[in-house]
Amino acid sequence: MSVRVRFAPSPTGPLHIGGVRTALYNYLFARKNGGKMLLRIEDTDQNRYVPGAENYILEALKWVGIEIDEGQGIGGPHAPYRQSERKEMYRTYAEQLIAAGKAYYAFDTAEEIEAMRKRLEEAGADAAQYNAITRLQMTNSLTLSAEEVQQRIANGDPYVVRIKIDPKQDIRFKDIVREWVAVHASTLDDKVLLKSDGMPTYHLANIVDDHLMGITHVIRGEEWLPSAPLHVLMYQYFGWTAPQFAHLPLLLKPEGNGKLSKRDADLGGFPIFPLQWQDPATKTIARGFREDGYLQETIVNFLAFLGWNPGTEQELFTMDELIEAFSLERIHKAGARFDITKAKWFNQQYLKGKSDEELAAILEANNNAPAVSHDTLLKVCHLMKERVTFPQEILSETAFLFETPTEYEEAIVASKWNADAIKAITAYVEDLKIYEGDFLADSAKAIWAAAAERVGIKMGKVMQALRLAVTGAGHGPDLMLTMEILGKDEVISRLEKAISTLPQV
Image 1 (tube, rainbow, N blue to C red):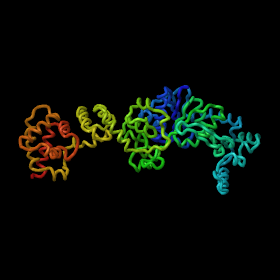
Image 2: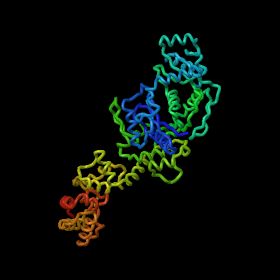
Image 3: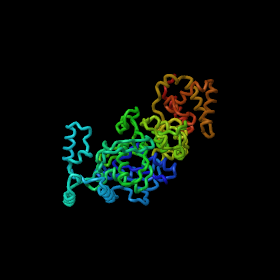
């Protein structure tokens, strides 16, 4: 059987990074097995629909590098892939269950249901549910005559369709991640399958769509595990073969205690969404990994390891390597701690591996490039890529390249700016002024060494003072390459300013 998986998000806001991991695992599994990846938009809860969320989902998947074979935004033989556009079809299947005695009409008002729950709570019931016991005390097609039911429907009385759970059975299924799962049907309630507005609930829509779209494996978050027995039962009711299930572990707070939330991300100072998101109602902006400077390769590698490992010491993977190594059997049962420090480490590794051209292109694409020549920008990238975590830091950490220092690090002035430093730097200025060759890092170093030797001062002894005079700080990236980027005339200007500005000792 050809593998077919699906990612089925709801357009209720920005896509959580946990959802991106679910999509990634589906994608890796499909590609590993030569299968297809489908995208379905589950928008049956119209009250929670957020404008722009669907486009956000499509853009986020594209940025991460998850290629959709069939579905929303792509098309395919099972269109439409937006559930709200499949509304009437779900009613047909709900009525099929009713005809088979596996579901029923329920006309209860919200007030009647609340009263029922209150009675159960006052009686000390374990669970205040609409189930095999309580349904016989409610207003539904199991307690009304067929004539009364038809009359109510004809009158336009609002109703829902509920599944009819047979409480005298065990429901068992094998989850790829969690092995055998067994639940007694008496613990389940009669879930709503079709709402009063004619829209299906998730339970009905996803079962019907997965069957019609030929989904072979349902790979989804652990939060859906409690619903899985109901879904398995529904497949039995319809007489369909259920797909194989794999429920992924939760993403946990950085400290490992409890489910990761947006509040945790806000407190920890890191994003929880792949892309920046502006709420269409409040206009508030939520940070995105992309805009914060995380590379696409980083997110793929970081998310892949949140709940899975290859069983080797290798940590850095291309997408193709992940596809080759991935298997559902190596997914962990326990929750995965969201260690943002590890994500930063991944970003450092991938940034170091970028060519100067690639980094310059990133800065230019994000409108972060300074008003310098492309060749100069390449040199800046080369200077900084071993020292930063995010591309934008290449510029924020090199302000000294674009602005002559107006202040000097006081501790370095006090400890390193002395008579020997002034003597050596003055000699360096003299030699630079008469130098006519190309001013490169090697030549800058050779002239400096010769000038220091000429005045009898060890070069290393006054190197930090030279850096201070050029950049205003005592520490930083390669000084000779920094001077090459600045150019001979700017270096001379800065050295002369430092000699005239800093104390004469």
